[in-house]
Image 1 (tube, helix red, strand yellow):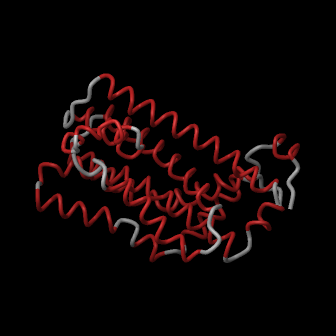
Image 2: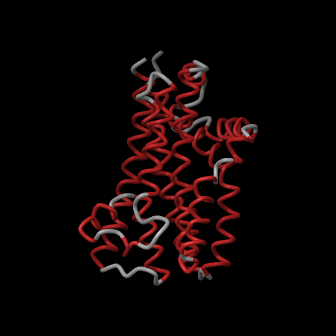
Image 3: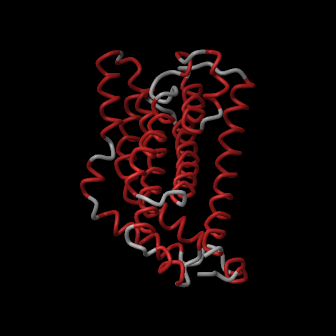
Length: 254
């Protein structure tokens, strides 16, 4: 199936709101998935509470950022499931729905449903960590950037799979390794110093380091702050633009 380049360019993001609402209704029926969406975060928070309660505020901030990052895994799974199992990808994209509207509608629908427990987690974090309004707004902005990054990479990755059975292992490995092993749930200063630049260019840990610095838990140099902020901004915007381009290209090549 070919999509007209003129149509895509003339009416970008068409159908986004309608498809977002449709996807939200679909996701709202996945009660088991919603119930288990906080399992990893809950387990890690319990460990922190037992081992070092003083780091609970840091861990709660990390749980918020990890939750937003992990939504990319759900985007990956859902996009691949629609395309591979339901064979509905072509049907959706044969409609007036634009490729980028499909990508963002899918991602936004998942966010609409799964953001509820994150909001509750955010309220707990503000109370426990005593976040100021400024730090709270910084956390909100960085969490949004992490979500956009993860949704973009999840959608792009979904197009590489031809078998759903391969997705679970790779998706779980990718999102858990980059969301748990780096200093997201624990202070940046506890990570090996030689690897600091690597951590600061990974969106989840870069965002966590910036919030930890604002909280006074971690001290970052001006260069480290610039590296983390620039890496997060460039990678998020760059990957989002690539995801829009990739959505259009994968449709036009059919």
